[in-house]
Picture (cartoon, rainbow, N blue to C red):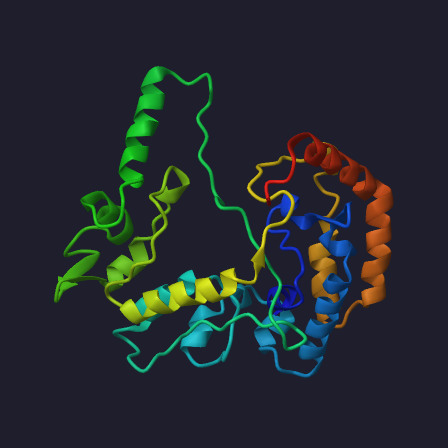
Length: 294
């Protein structure tokens, strides 16, 4: 619920540390310094207080982090996850629960208007080769990348995304469909090495693919890029743990154990303990390199 609120209120994502910053009116502002951040937490607190949040999530139980199975069982009406769940849950439930329906919900603006969304980086996972690696190792890695980057429709693409025919998927009416074993075993993690051009194609559930594309088009129209979009930035070690306590503090606020005023005090502490220095450090990067958001 908290992350849904952050989207509805237009809070910078902070999915990566650099994405928590944005230049506004010539000044670098961190997400925790914005009014939107506090408003989103207060709104979420009201939802918890109203009793419209599932008890598992309210208690912070681990299964609340993956509410998909409970959604499939009818215990949730809405849950917050990425759009991959749209197809994966549909495929997972197709044979065992034919009445199952799932669909994506457009993100709304908290005031009833359009949302103000923030783009995450175009690549979210990376593979690196040590510059001291031997030529043989480099050639091996590139050979793997040649397979994992194979485009949609190739044999290599089918192997990495669907597995072995007859074991992990069957072809029915010309359409590859994962078996139960395929749903258990096959999840393409090779994208961390190299991936093909992005596609959304679910020939087993074309309505889902169409829905995902149309959802992205609608939401993309409201999406902006923060100042450090597309940059891979590693903060100095001295500030590594500077923001660590905010995740727990946020959860305490939405569950009524802490107040928004506690967050405001924490932000003041964050500034004095290194937040303002970190701002200057990011400012130097921005001045030297310019914004990638252009």
